[in-house]
Image 1 (tube, rainbow, N blue to C red):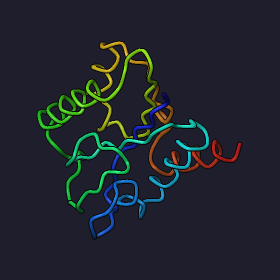
Image 2 (image 1 turned 135 degrees about the vertical axis):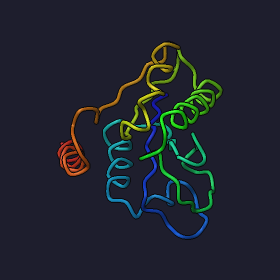
Image 3 (image 1 turned 90 degrees about the horizontal axis):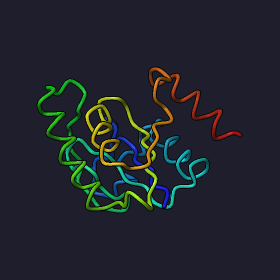
Length: 144
C-alpha cells in the first residue's frame, strides 16, 4: 500500500473538521495532497501533526496553534518517537511504502527510525528548498 504522509501547516480552519480539511487553507498542503493523489497514487493519506502526531486524513480534529518550527530539539525528538510508535502500529514494513511530504522539522528525527526499522520510504521534496521552490516543483510534477 502506498501511504502519503503530509506535514501539518500553520494555516488551519477555525472549526473542528477532518484533518484533510483542517489544513486546506495552505496552498502547500493542497498541492501536496494533489501530488499524493495524482503522482504517488497514494492509497491512503496520513498527516504529521505537531499536536496530534500521526493522524489519518479522515480523522476529525479540533483547531490548534502548535508547530514544530522553533520547538526545542528535545521536544522534536520526543514528538518523533511518538510518531514512530504510531507508524509501527499502523504500517507494515513488508507491504507499505511511506512517502513523506513534509518539512525537515517533521522528518529529521523520524527518518532515522523509519530507515533503521527497515521501512520502504522516500522524501521526494527533500533538498528542493523553501516553500516557494516546493510549490514550483509540485506544480511541475502534478502537470506531468
